[in-house]
Image (cartoon, rainbow, N blue to C red):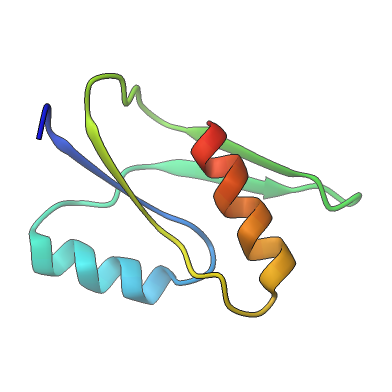
Length: 77
């Protein structure tokens, strides 16, 4: 590992992300995920992750299309 651990959660599984966060003793990092009326998704991180070890917790279960798009947009952020 290169830096401190940053743990983020998508909207697909917040309870699982919280359990993992507590188990690891690493707080979830802040983020905003906004879905616009035209179904576009916007993700903003509350802090810089440059040089950090980042882990993203997100399911790809139903609704599959939304969760996969959110995951891909989150990764691009």
